[in-house]
Length: 287
Image 1 (cartoon, one colour):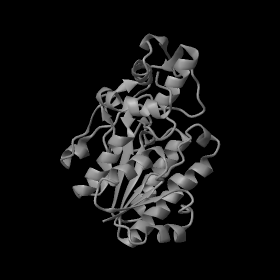
Image 2 (spheres, rainbow, N blue to C red; image 1 turned 45 degrees about the vertical axis):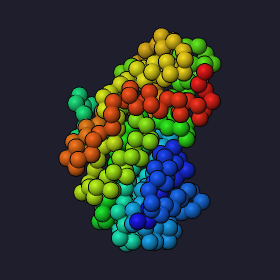
Image 3 (cartoon, rainbow, N blue to C red; image 1 turned 90 degrees about the vertical axis):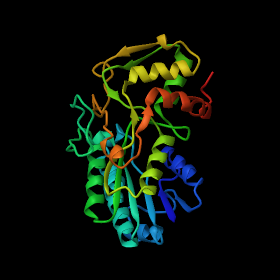
Image 4 (cartoon, one colour; image 1 turned 60 degrees about the vertical axis):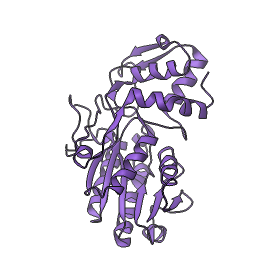
């Protein structure tokens, strides 16, 4: 089987390529210089001969997208659509990575895979449009939504929190946003299992089990860095205004994974404990 990973140099893409490297299959890792997502011809050439395409490429600067929505749309929607059509023409299965930001965050129970998308931010709108473009291409596809990602191979919340805690000795983190901190290594594993089991086309959620606030996650990060979690004080979203609105509640349900016989990712605290030394060591921020 020939796998093509688009966005292979990013935080998630790097771990997807690493996981695929343990399979006895061909893996092609593509970065920005290797394929032009805005060119249907470039996408077609890049995906020729592919059996599975994993699209990890994305415009993820959530706040910048508020004033650069066209740029975000070009990558997250137009580019996703071009890849989806090229994958369909090649007879390949496409795995499109998406996000919790497609929801408005007003729920009080975990979002089902079939819940309507109601994004509040420009980033969320472009990712929802990407999901629609992939479906409209008519090919075999999986949409894999994830959230609150962290990993060893790129900027992420834990690295920032550890650095600030070490530099300042104290920090404020919002405690009124709820989600699921999720390790990119675990998402890569879910992607491989979905393809390996021949999961039916459609949408799946790949997030850790349980839920946390950013404040709770920050305390866990600071503790893993060898500092006192008490230096992390709670604050509110209203007090820490950002250009893009954040979902107050973006916990995702795992019904469809269970239906196809794939165990959801384990509790976020357990997975952070397993990941912390790798994630913080990579950034040289661990005490």
